[in-house]
Length: 206
Image (cartoon, rainbow, N blue to C red):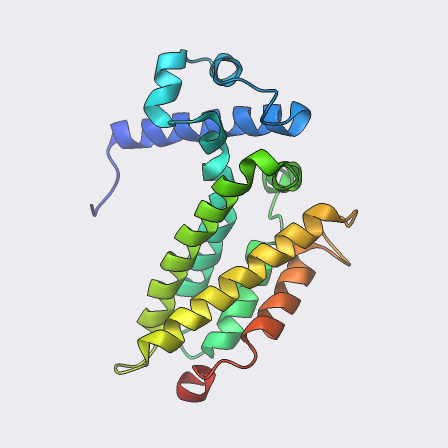
């Protein structure tokens, strides 16, 4: 689908995000296991029936928030200067996407830390990163010249996505702040550098 989203689509997305924020608050406070879908629906101001129109399971409700950072990363990467080497563009966009831009983003980062500590949400986290990897793969491919080895592109996307996953998981288990030493931005840049450093793709596009 292309073009501007319809009013119905925009309203649906707003409702989806409101449910996600309500679920994140509840999960962060008491854990996913102790939270019911009914409680999420009530906190969102919707019926349980409406909740299940958006999400098939209560754990899935936080997927939009967990996916937001990866979506921002891919967008920043795609919008980066075309003459910037792919490796550098990946690292810069990753670092920027892991830096809270405002108070709302800072709050989302706090939720993310709590959500990543919850074992009940591990499968949602893995699915989010699988989707992010596929979007990044397509974006990297768009920046590469014709004839670039598709396997190298896939390896680059997989390594970069794994780097961000590891960085966020490491931060979530630490006591480091959301900014500064040990933050997602610092860990993300380091992980991207180290996990993608030996890729053969850079020999072709840099």
